[in-house]
Image (cartoon, rainbow, N blue to C red):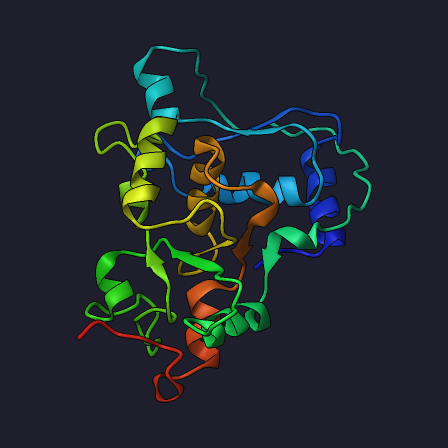
Length: 231
C-alpha cells in the first residue's frame, strides 16, 4: 500500500533524494521488469517531476553499458518537503466496488478493470500465493498478464505499437476509463506504465487500484457475486 506523504518525504530525505533530482528506477537483471514501475508510479503520484523507469537493466548489462559494483556507501541526507498525493490517480476499494456492482448496468460509465495476475489466478483455477485468499476476478475485469506486455527474451516492454495491439486484442477500449489491478498493487503499475508507453487511452482516465486483489478478496466474498471464477 502507498505510504503517507510524511513517510515518503522521510524516506527520500534519508536517501538523499532531492525534489529536483532526476530519478531512474530499474529492477535486477534477472527480473527485467517487475517492481520498478510501481516505484516510478509512486514517485509520480507524489509529484516528483523527473522520474523514469529503465527498460531495462538486463538489456543495459547485455549491451555493455557502464555498471559498477562494490560496498554500499552512505549518502548525505537532505530535506524533502512533504508532498501531496495525487488522489486522482489512485482507486480505492469503494470506487472499485461501485465499478463491479455497475458492470453491465445500463447507463454505467463502463470503467474497465485490467488485472495483471496470471491467467490461472484470474480464472480461479490456480491458488493465490497468500494462504486462505480466494483466487478469481472482479466482475467484468479483463486479464492482461504482465507476460503479455514483455518480450519473453529481454523481459523488456514490447514496442508501443505491439503494446497497443495487445490491449486492442484484449478488448480494452481506449476511450473508456481504466483501473489497473493485480495481486498487491505492484504489477498493476506494469500495466499502467505499458498504457503510458503505448499512449493508449487518456492519462486523466487511468488509475491504479492500490489494494488490488489482496484487499478485494479479503473484503468481499464469492457469495455476493463479487468474486468470479471461470467454470
